[in-house]
Image (cartoon, rainbow, N blue to C red):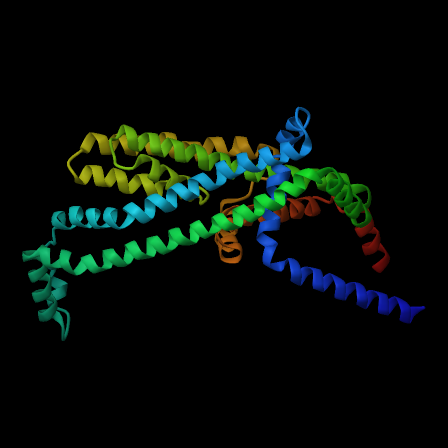
Length: 355
């Protein structure tokens, strides 16, 4: 009898390993599809009351494709077309305005290289144009790096397309999948299964709504601010700000350089106005709107958010921007519940029997 159980266990382990190996290439798409179907399930449930489930799932896939793929396509297209020219124009604008001060006394007093350092410093101060020529090749490298990053972002569109394809079937089979997941969790967690499912569900919804809602709002506010300040490409920079807003300090990476650029180009009031607008409106959205979105879930600390974004991108690519924080938020919420003493019934019984 024991031998049969061992053999059966080995067979099950082998089958499980094979399933994991087969599904591993689609792990990020499966996670994305599951999160997307779960978060948008209330909308799908209302939609299928009016039309057939298949048409409702197709409509959901189409709407999600427009919302997710359109910004990526816009950013990739505009970035590849205008990115190198923007970097070159910025270099041509800033370099002539650079002023090198006179070398301090400690430079001349530096042993061995003091005289040479003073000479190089003085030549740079006399002819800043040579410095601009030396910086120009690096501007090209920066542009190429930005283009390669945009290509990687565009490749994330293929993963999103796969996730939408899988999410279509998740929408169709969501009821049966939910019952199966509930039954599996009940066998592990016992009477605490419903509570854990509510925690996980609230955390996923809260994190996704917080990340996406705040990112979209900050992107729109950034685009509006650029348009009011009469800066070029407000739609492009608004999209960039929306993508960077996933990070705790993402949006300021867009509007702070723009405000400095306006001040440096002798548009003092427009630059100061953009700076005030960025602090009050754009960054204010992150501090006031995000807590409203995630009030129903677990509020993930900024450090875990940053780790989730970076680790998610390294592990899952562009989709990890959202997958990382969601997974860490679930783990964080369950850890808080466990530390508070809400231990699943069956697991607590196992601990008592071992002690």
